Image (cartoon, rainbow, N blue to C red):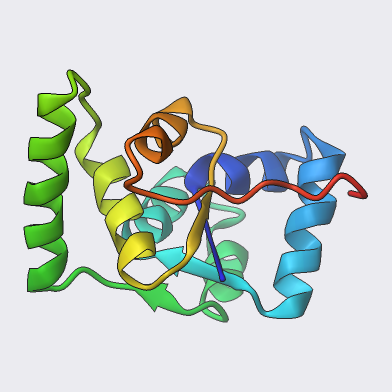
Length: 132
């Protein structure tokens, strides 16, 4: 199960990296993609008027992870760990990471903040297979 971050979706929709597009298409075909509620909001709020309906329709086929009270408790724990290690993360990135971690999903992001989170063992990262 792979939670795909906004940065990957943007690359996919813009077709800026064909390797990313092919890998995401393969994951979608396999039913392995999940969506965090904040990613869904980011994608829809950044969509053009012309593409909004199509993007909403496409995303509606994916399972969406929603925060629970336990998610917010996990964020408190993670924030304390990050502060002790001299790290700071954006609230949305932390929320996306926590939603993935709670459900055992890996995170696929082009955002370096997730690599820093992985070094703190907060999240596990997805790596695009070399054959894509």
